[in-house]
Image (tube, rainbow, N blue to C red; front, side, top):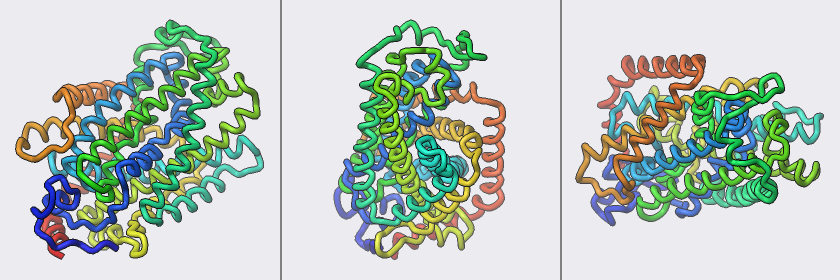
Length: 476
């Protein structure tokens, strides 16, 4: 376990990560074992371009039909706006708690707790839904392979690997990520090497209803933007890894933006290639796996099988990266004393040999493993997209308020064209939110109401105690 340093908070370069942490009232404890490239690799693995396309892309096509191309383009643009905001904020507040810790500094405890709650729910559901992709695609190769049991075993293995040193995990995810790049390249080349569909096909949204092509509304496309955003989501993980990233705090902002841009380009290349290269539009829209359909039609069943194996690797890699990120968010919430004392103290524990937040990691892994046995889990987590959009609105508002209120802090990474990016992020996210199903909106409202009740009746009265706890940690 890394020992807390005792030097004055002003010692060292002003952009040094540990110096900045102490200025913010935290004692550096996690080992800084990540380069900027290592952070980008882990974050890209969290985004998992190939895995997201092969799962989330199916839902986008189902929702918007041929309008899925516009949905992905709009989602990509919105994601870049949000990433610019996150990059500036992450460099200014390089804290492992990520967005929730930043929101706390700018908007206050109530808003930060709602943001944290969004992450906690994602920590419960996201790893399990991705792990089920491992079992589902393995089952497509061999029907005798049980989906739920295989997914649960994969999650157990992921939890064990997440206990290793962070730079070891970065190396592992880098190797898996290379294989993901192959999957992306195969899909993109299969489509762009033989483009069949015209641009006009995707300008006027159509989809399948009872086996027939019918026109889809603009609302369907806007609703699909939220799901497309979920596909490229994950670049905020670079902030969660900020206390383990070497060098200037600017590197945190760079890791956020680079990860987003690379992830967006890769996903757009594959999705647009598959869309324009599909030989039969009706079969593409009706396929349960539209992206692998294009590869199979172009190069045969064997190529599709290889692609499926690549997809399994992508899902496993995503599980590992997401577990690493969410464990650090929970660890930071324990450090901040957000939960009752016994829970907070447990979550704040580090494994001496590797500096891994082992209790937080086990909590994420245990919940995900149990949920893997629920066959309908993928259907249950559609509301996660609503939580993601809600976080984006908080991010946009935080970026604006931070600039207006704080004119003295050194911003080692500054988003350009302020306030355009955060305004576009807020408007775009709100528009996408307006088109979500009533069921998903109600679920999120209930989650937030429970969160506000917890804040009002418990957390608000503990604010002074939490500040004292943090001061004691820095003075150790």
